[in-house]
Image (tube, rainbow, N blue to C red; front, side, top):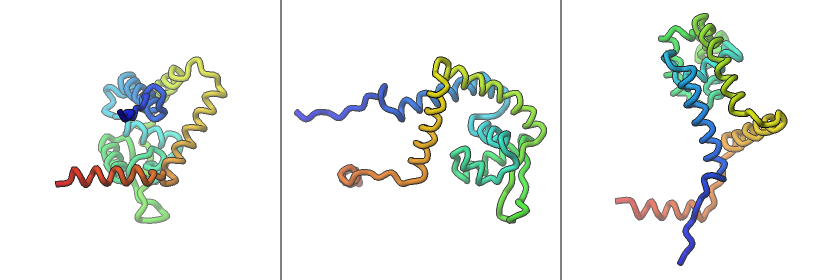
Length: 169
């Protein structure tokens, strides 16, 4: 009898990362975003702008790991909410520059301490050097997955193609 493939999620890094991320998003949404009409995606835009504004819309998309078309819709929503302004760049008429409004700056000033407290709760009990190493590792992993194409072994590609052909009508 052939051994069935298995994956122990309790020791699988993508699962563990996603589990922590999901818990952080849930807690931040419940503790900070309720009543603001913001969701986690619009919060990330405001957070990015709070760190360095104004920014080109394409740069915000890169910083927040958001598709450019999705970012355009998020910015439009934030403009309608009176939280950001959107103007054409002085350098290029094709570039859009986004900045926080005073209303957004006041809101972000209330939300950042909650975000920082939540991060502190998440890393409680971890040595400072471990947290620094974890951040470096996560940045490197993101770079590995976004800057280079991750190869899929030929035997797996062939197996997926064969299965797809069998399912095709």
